[in-house]
Length: 345
Image (cartoon, rainbow, N blue to C red):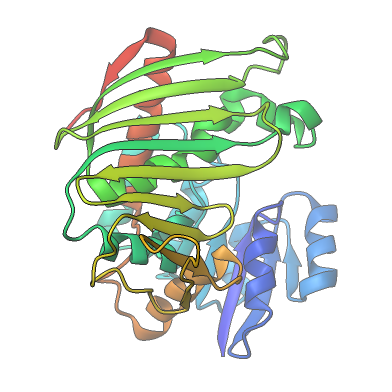
């Protein structure tokens, strides 16, 4: 039985807990949050011992793995406490909000040989693996990424999300997923240009996020890409269109589909747990459709395999790599405020 604990029991932790409670080999042993009401609510639903001090939890309960789902500014102490006890950690993204603090944490974790997987969920999805296989024999030149939601229209998130100094806004909280996936697929970015606007709510008081933003990148390998993001859209959408010399690839990260336009490559086969759906109306398209499972299932499966096997050689995103995505994300923010930015090597 794998005994697991959680530090931070806010909104995102539920997607992990919901998956873990389906596993017969996992026992939710302990939950910790500084807000006693929040942890009591989770305890009632998922079980485990409840704590408001993570150090007491780590000292009193034998844990095989810990999920850290705290806000980004509250990561250093839990990460190092787990590393000192040799407990593997699944840590939600982003790794930090501040590059200097992130570098110091990365150094401390490396010194302790810590086992940490960062929650960049897209890296573990079967349709992303299918995309990588489909693009193997192609040369990519142009990419368009789009992420849209309506959270500034509904104002339904906790107040701290709308304070850029706390959440990082659309870039650090959401776009970082797309930026990480682009890094994962195409390498590092060199130059960025950016624009942002607030067409609905002007910045005032603790409402300091950018509602719409546009970014233009040049990757070190010469690929040109854009990312557009809105918090005043008509619903949740996340799509990336990739233009190659042989095919156009359309991956919809919201509904879990991948469409490859053009004569299908023989190597463009569906990945494990992904269903191939031919498009009857267009012989030149190959469709891959996600099997309907929660996207968070796959990153948690990957993490638990590493915990059980002890083999971390294929960690999808360790802390150092997550830090590189933070550096890119923060460079995008500089590009928005200054017009352009260069990503440090």
